[in-house]
Amino acid sequence: DIQMTQSPSNLSASVGDRVTITCRASQTLSIWLAWYQQKAGKAPKLLIYKASILESGVPSRFSGSGSGTQFTLTISSLQPDDVATYYCQQYNVYPLTFGGGTKVQIK
Amino acid sequence: QVQLQESGPGLVKPSQTLSLTCTVSGGSISSKNYYWTWMRQPAGKALQWIGRIYSSGTTNYNPSLESRVSISMDTSKNQFSLQLNSVTAADTAVYYCVRDAYQTSSLDSWGQGTLVTVSS
Image (cartoon, rainbow over all chains, first blue to last red; front, side):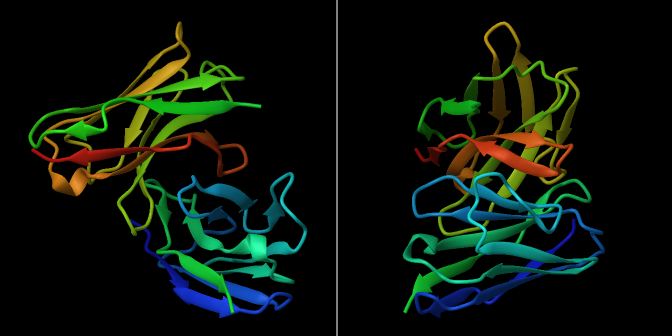
């Protein structure tokens, strides 16, 4: 299985800060990576697919970049509604696998 | 807008079979554009892909669970189902049914999830 490693595992930032989450894959993925947001007690929600394409309806402060084995999710201006755990997921090889998650909180 | 809803027992005894059904509304599971997938998430842990089924009935399973899992579909009811045999406490998790939009390489619609506890 492809191992997905996210960092940091926890993040605390102020409203308006730029936040970056990193995801590293144990094998090359090309661009077959997605990002999800999961709020407490809720199902995950798709944010970005194919590494950098914003899902319809997702605020433009979210962006994704990267290819190969290293990817980033950036929130350009952190908002209170962004408090959640964020997961990366590879879609290059089955079984699909997820990172361990990054919990984002407001300082 | 497609909606997915899981249903089934919330408590299963060890060694027995976990059975869940996902009812899809607002879209057809016969669509050629999607796979229909089961995921799970133990408390405080990351998501795990269990397996998927296509409109043709073709299935793929996570090798770590393949000996115990079966996914099926009932197109007349627009439902797909999960069976997991010989469960243990390690199978306690929130189970999600998910639409896999393989053309965009993403899991684009999720059910709300259902907690299944394995305990005697």
